Image 1 (tube, rainbow, N blue to C red):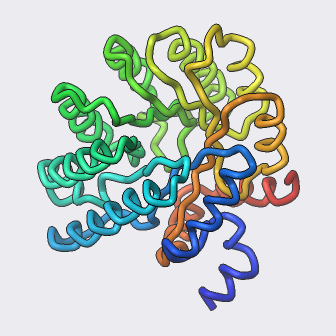
Image 2 (image 1 turned 180 degrees about the vertical axis):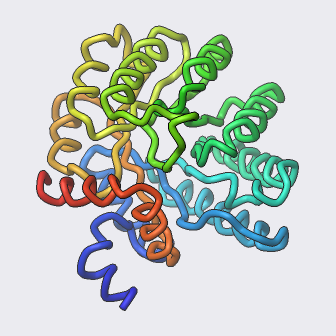
Length: 280
């Protein structure tokens, strides 16, 4: 059933189950003008030893991207590297991957996860930046009340940030419950980030937010990021207009539990996927 589901529908949003399947998809996206953020599906691991397998897979992905000459960086989740087990374990595993990327002239993006992991994620990110690792970026989620303060603390360090609205289900005590408030916060964060000296990845399929970013940008230290298979016509239109677009392209055999968790965590995600299928 899982394999059939990938062929009939989920394959639109997942760039293959293996690295060998991912590479030609990535090559095709590059040929159409897109850069990629490559991610191996899978999140929280329960044993320290499991993280070594994840690190090996991610190193192989980094090396293959370099060998194929793909315009792509790797994005990863720290729970996949053991954050739920031990913060220092995740930090050590990430350092290994950042240093491997550094040897290849490549970049690593730390994805942001549930609110319970935000402090640890930012500590690990800032620790590596303080150690001189400049080939590293992180993500901020607009729907969390704290994000405005987090951005203020990061901006003096000229960070490479990805701004997202946020997809996890969080309580009203931590996150804006109303879409209108999230949208307004997202635009405000875009303005502040673009006014800084770092690099900003604006990750959204919201055309209003995209046009707002274009209107307020005074430089080209930014790119748009969108999900593989979601709003492809919009993606192509932005590239045709001369804007850099990076496609977040996840792959791996863990696509089914990943998709089910995302849909279960937030019912609005179901409507979002359905709308994307209709809009094209």
